[in-house]
Length: 208
Image (cartoon, rainbow, N blue to C red):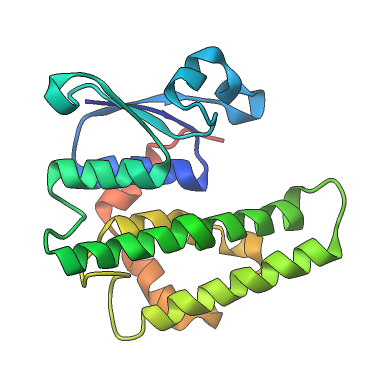
């Protein structure tokens, strides 16, 4: 049983998709980030960085509750614990990890900055908009090249790398990106979007 402290952001959606794909029991506890609930003492005990998501595995190591934060680490933990969404072969495993890090270190942060400066910033800053839109487009190109001739991002199978990248790709319009510009990503996007576990995970998200 997983207690998931979450809100429907790109990072938050990763975890709900993962638990549906893994077919494990979970309960979502909403953390309304627009109301600052991530800064409460209760949530800070789960994640000192005060960011969603955070998770408690009620049957963690030694049968004791185990707290995790950072979406990439949570995905790795769940995949390894349940023996799904991560290959056992070392080379294939680290292929998945590399592309997970691609999302965590580049595809997520830069797309998030594009979202902010294009949509949410109180003033339009042309330098920032151009900088992060340009880098976002470059990263989409990297992903499109990667997906030439293959169904999934890594290891020739659906994995936590796909789960990590997909929710950020969902917001392509916010980034000034058309799926038609990146045909390999478009095919992959549609393939991921059709998965029943992905659809259930997205439906599990709270309205935001």
